[in-house]
Amino acid sequence: MSRPASLPGTPLDPGLQPERTRMAWSRTSLAFVANGALLVHAGHVPDRWWFMLPGCAVMAAGLTVYVVGLLRHRQVDRAVRAGDAVCGDRAVRATLLIAVSVCVLAGVVLLGRP
Image (cartoon, rainbow, N blue to C red; front, top):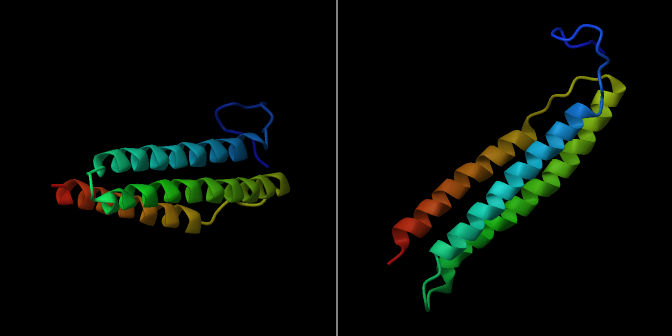
């Protein structure tokens, strides 16, 4: 493994990158859950419970993103400790797809509300 160019002589800590990865995925999942809760609140209309379904779906997506983040953390941790390259963007692309879906669901809730 190489040392950072800006800090010559500083040892590389292989635990930092997986830790940053875990924290980033946790923040992303928290953002999904919080936005889902806001969508549930915005969709709360008496006698129209189905307006809250998009918010529930977004909160479920947030929990899914959290689980994916845990799996990604393990993958990055193994790769960094083995000295392998950390690449692979399937999880990031899936999260992007979920984020776009959240925007669409938010539009449905906000524009479809009486």
